[in-house]
Image 1: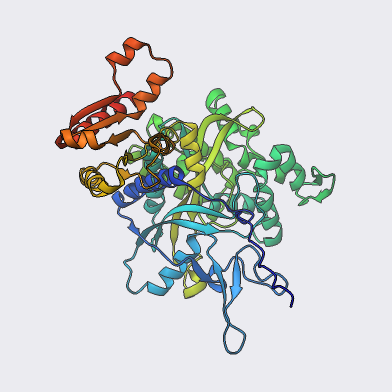
Image 2 (image 1 turned 45 degrees about the vertical axis):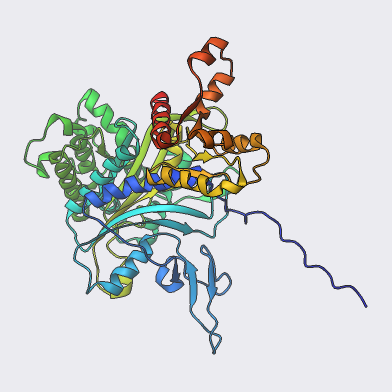
Length: 536
């Protein structure tokens, strides 16, 4: 009789595009999310924890098709008696679930509804360097109000959040744009009713960061060859129309020149612009600190002309700028910037992006800015999918892993991670005594554990403590027990002295102390306090 085959052992490896997170990383993330939640709570937002699984129909963006039913998401079909159960999927963001939650519970929720949510999301997309299929997001949204005060509040809260987690002022900027302004530019170009060409322009604008000004110009007009040599058909705009789009994208450069050299003369106006003045939009004066924002607005006025949608977008940006200025958020922290183009096809009004401005070295050793860590905007049509009625909403999403990476670059996290105090075991028959010690330490708020491995080799116990990053080891053998004392070893100081201390230094700065058993907690706390002071 043939021997039954053994079941093959599974490979001990994470699935492609996923990774494991260990103690320090998990702790750092939890601490950062706690700080963010504190800011959101201070602003009056309530926590929401929705299901990680939604119906694919509710997610909307990645509706299954016949050939690829799980395109973009991790999806499966429920089994039922008829064999035609619902398609379910892991959520790919936290916004689509919010729309479902609000539509489902709107009669019980306050209006406006202010919520924040934090948790993992999943994308069934090709992984790459630093790009995983599971990652954390941290969102805050206000649903049910069209007031620009909600958008201004989101921007202010985002600035406060970055500073709270350790990004100092001067190392970040929150940029604000408005989809309606671009719609105004398209309408001024005569493309307002040409949905297909407008959508093509929008897709081209979204490539600005990748292909640059020249690449966008080619794609807007006659086309260009990509890196592989394949030719990409252009949108077919005339030069004048393409220049208007580029003037929108290059607003920052143009405004910087105007602030330096003075405003353009009438014959220097942007082609197609109406030449209207800023005071046609706002007839009140503004502080010098707002000069940049209003110079940008003046430039955009020349692009949108008298189009209703463009004027509406500019008024919304002006209102946001005024509301932020009243709270002390000037252009040094939050700035009007039309170069924010990502997501313009999705959002319906103001859009926001938080960018970290300090430099890092890339994988090739070249200096570059760290870049974006958060994005969001106003999306007034998402809830409508469920209710049939337009429900205004605005919000922001922080890329948790990106922000953690930024904090590590700034040295705000990723340094010393303190392990527990380790109570060593000198006599297995006295485990109750050691457990009593560790209980005293824990009750005093000190992280501590008893060594639970094989206690025969004391050196292995100290090696264990070293591997755990323990600051202190507690020792009580039979002699110490008889005398009513404990030995407390400062492992941090001991490691420093071992690196090259002289005999005199060993004598002057002993790293092991004998104290009465009743002074255990006090001495450990004293050593930990000294270590903490030495790190700062």
